[in-house]
Picture 1 (cartoon, rainbow, N blue to C red):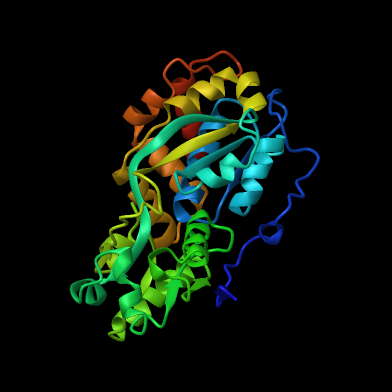
Picture 2: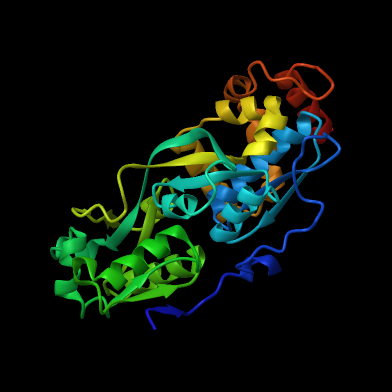
Length: 317
């Protein structure tokens, strides 16, 4: 088989379900008594950004729920209205999934993180030996054992790699994708690098992997990964229309690589809970949150930024 799974992420039960089995109570969020439903994938950046978003929405007077799903399940949930928001949509790698959905049911509220990178990467040993492009990989198939390391099954990056293999792009038709999880993949990168072996894997930036490992992204002359990537906030169309204050919040919620890298590091490399990370960051960055909440009102009519500060004080008490 093209894909070989060697280590599955320890995910909540619903992650293994390809077709959605969302609860009947999930949904529109039009009434503040109904929870605002977030879907997220088990990436550290998605976990952190979702909890930061949830905390702000709670401060505005809404209940929230969040659950971990596969990417295809999240797209389907946004399309059907069983999910309201997804704050970590990597474009263009996710674009093919969105193209298969009803575009009238899913709205992009903002590019919340511009100029990211998502592509194949190799360790320094391979790069310095001449593997600087996707087109160089097949010449050195033996050094890589003909394997590309990816993350969780169903991930958009994995799908791009599988398509390259299926189409024999860059001569990769006889290669194999090893699917696992982010931690599983990076563990293999670290092991193979320590052993002096070569490794090619799905890498992205911002992420602490870029500082932890001596790695280089490969050139992609056939643009298999698309153009410059970025991250968008997606919403169910009806939810966005029925919640103009939240639509405004998420259309204004924009950050930079340093912020996202900080969140990823906190999730992966500290013992803090995501809720604690969100509360601390929001408390320490009022200038950015004031921009996000500019002109936004809480459900009781108070200024959104003031509502957030009051909420944070209550949580710290």
